[in-house]
Image (cartoon, rainbow, N blue to C red; front, top):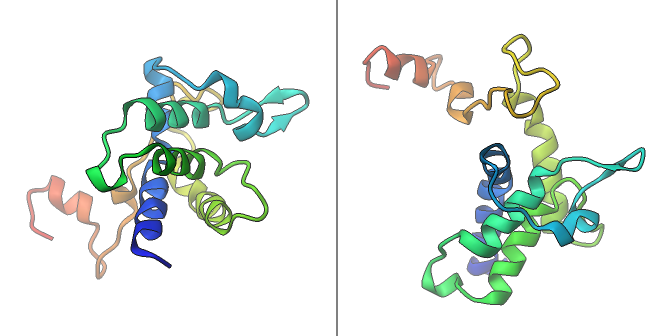
Length: 147
């Protein structure tokens, strides 16, 4: 894999759920991409946050000079936004889809409010899930201890 392709994949993985923040903030979304990126459940589109991810990447995301062109930006937006409805022949899209499904349980906690309401449900940081040699880094940092 070429270094540039790897960078695009890593950026897409990092940014794939940025739309969750944008959606809650009422930011812009890519209207014309709903059929392309959103799964359909009983005639209703789901996972609308991907439309906000697409819009943010296409319109607002500053990119390093070597990646700032329409082809790379479109590829990055497509990878990040298709994680709920990937194309079957694109291995990068499939990889992000699998990774998102594997990690889905770590961004939600039962009993913390917002069940059924994506706007008020707490988004958890991946750092809350880390365990380094038996130490919980976030808890240790909050206590003022070095990890």
